[in-house]
Image (cartoon, rainbow over the protein chains, first blue to last red):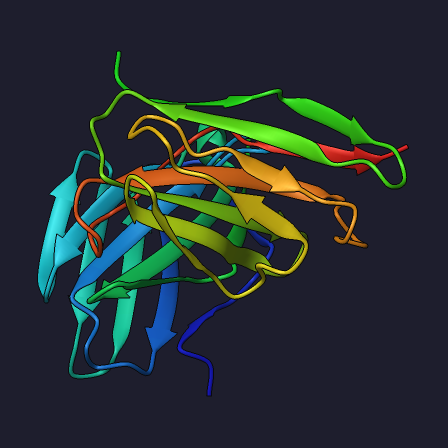
Amino acid sequence: QKEVEQDPGPLSVPEGAIVSLNCTYSNSAFQYFMWYRQYSRKGPELLMYTYSSGNKEDGRFTAQVDKSSKYISLFIRDSQPSDSATYLCAMSADDKIIFGKGTRLHILP
Amino acid sequence: DGGITQSPKYLFRKEGQNVTLSCEQNLNHDAMYWYRQDPGQGLRLIYYSQIVNDFQKGDIAEGYSVSREKKESFPLTVTSAQKNPTAFYLCASTGILNQPQHFGDGTRLSIL
């Protein structure tokens, strides 16, 4: 089993819809849980991160961590065409950080 | 504005040539990283450095070399021993080892 699994997509949704992006993981030692957004030909941009479990909200974005299920989610409300990008989850413990392979998201105008 | 600057944005390598990718940060971060990104393979760690004059191999270090003479700078050399160097190279940094990393905008390396 891979340490972090993320569906590569592509995921296509109409503008204004709620988007749900997810990752599963196997290492219960992970402490930081991160979401990055990457536009084409650009570096990943840190969107949100949480330490340990729980929810965090920032504008249209909500990150959730369920450590009992080893499952993290990123929700995007009122999705916009500018949200079209690849979203990478990442998790870290001690001196190790593991990235998911990314989900390509297309918001259709 | 604080950030990570990678240069050049595009780089071409001839057969048998070594090329060096630059990474500079003004975030006062101790730890710096180099990743390679290929389509469908996600980010793979090449080298990382926790402090000046110290660095460790990542998962795919063969054919690459690094130096860390200054806190702000972590250049990556792609040597002629790297037989498949065409990829998008990303530099990242963080203040504390397992905390979220911040990335530069990458260098795309291609073979002539």
